[in-house]
Image 1 (tube, helix red, strand yellow):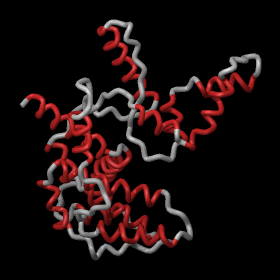
Image 2: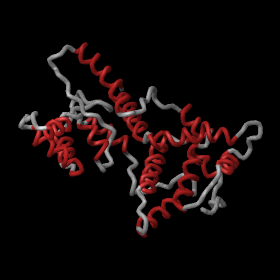
Image 3: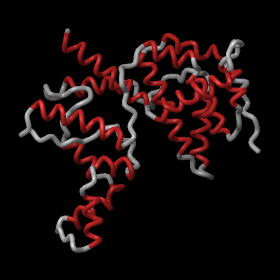
Image 4: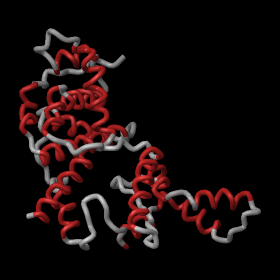
Length: 283
């Protein structure tokens, strides 16, 4: 049975900076934590180097606010802004034309070699052959489905769309809304219905989602256990008039897991780029 996690390092005061943290700060803190979660999920048994990396990751989490490091991107949003401002006039923070580099990058993905083979065999249109019918189905599947299912690349959450410009603007706009709604459902994508504000950041602070993420991740890295009861007492030590264990179970835990699962730093980066670009263009 796993031993109980040593939490003598934990101090709520170390998380005070999150109360006034900028959106750039939140982006960085989530980028690094997302990387640590990926590292832990892909842990290889007996890989000493991997274990050393995870041990180092745990040590950087214990101070609460992860210190700046040149090994992680700080300017994800700035690169998005530059890409829009330096691109064609029709470029935006969320919608752009596919570049030749984008196409080359997808085509060079060896994880999808079976897809390329299916496309080659499906090209002869010999539908009498049962095998070719299966290959044709693979070839006709939206390419993003293959990327999401088979690719090991850490890809941006992009979707590649073909637009028929012979249609009217009104039809294209209506069709795009239809496609977006149903495509998100097909890939089980969480639709971010609004822009994040300080209200959201305050909510994450109030319900201790970062503390929960750090405690749970360190417990996994160190192979230790920590109960929901102990988590609740550590995150909400001065709450006496509410059931803090239920709060962790119903609010803190699902919110924290959603923030990591949905790679929220990507949405924050896109939002910040949008705000900066629109601000620059309207200035």
